[in-house]
Image (cartoon, rainbow, N blue to C red; front, side):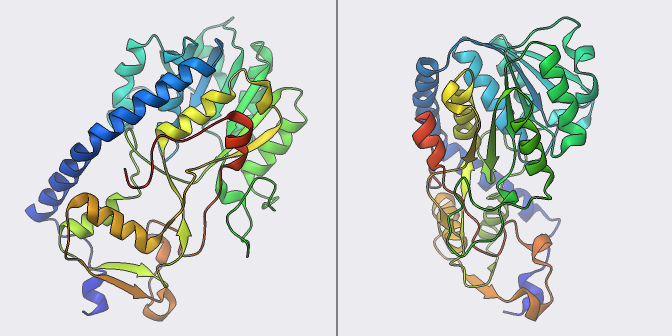
Length: 342
């Protein structure tokens, strides 16, 4: 197989539409298992989360947006008063995509949904609004999170939860990454965490990695399904044994929900990830099994040798990059309802 053939972009033909249809069929086949898991974790959230008034500032796009969706859902189901403010405009075309097109589910649970700017939250939620907990699932540095911290103090909140990133960790020779490992001090997320530590608020930070599941608009697994269902070879950079971590957004939203109003979470960083890793080759095997594809080919390559910019050609980092959620297991009593297998 020639490398030019391997890396050909998906053709704009009916075959691609067929691929997406097959992907949808795969998702339907695993939906029953996921519904059972969602019901189980919802019961756990209802029994462990204290009632609070919570504001969630949610990003308008990217991989983190479904975390906010699931967080709001879990909190509302547990009897909390929840407002979610999407950082952007309601008429943005991105609001037609998941998870925003599922916001009716939140409104049916009593969640207030508004749109606005983190620089002027009061204009969106109303002057005089009061909250116990503010969650920032939007900003990446102090220029965007700073105004939200200021608003939290002005609205009477005693707790601030921040959705950070596992990308802040420095490369390690002893994976997985655990809370307390060395981080890139210059990273915007780290500077936010440092500011929160001296803010006077009860605070926690959650560091996600790769995210999948219902409500996601940036599916990590779609790249694999697309190639497998079209009968294309699957090019994997390196040996394929590199470890990674992919987590369902419902489990991550549930983890953060467990911290709301919980003094055990104060001052702690939590790896917001699945509790089991997966190799890059393993992602191919799992997706092939889910799609019912039995005949497939993995092609390993050296990106430098073939002149491929791996960041654009592959959805994962081509190195060991995975974290362990031990702090959430020990401190919050968290456990995920989903696995990489479904």
